[in-house]
Figure 1 (cartoon, one colour):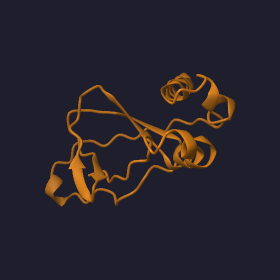
Figure 2: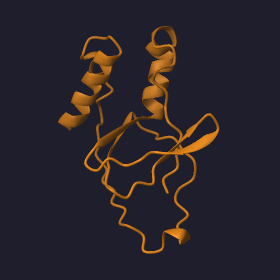
Figure 3: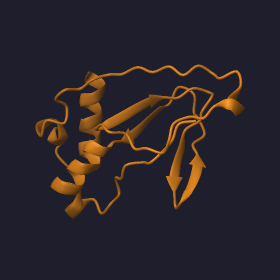
Length: 121
């Protein structure tokens, strides 16, 4: 759970806030860790993947491998995100976006931190 606390501290600092700001407004309450493992598909041409979505949490942290498959929707086009093995990729989720839009970001961050719509293939 320390990862979540540190991530919220870093994000608070990146926004120019007190490092404990997001922790102080209870963003870390109910932190959970879910683990998913997607082995390489022996026939990727038969794989459908998931539909377009945004993550319904505060933050999603992905440990990347060499396989990849992550895409984001940017200017109405799907862009492949090249994997960097061992890198942590952090997506801002719906709950954090809603917190920013309603509480703070609508006045101060000028849309710099927005949730990412993506499928996973």
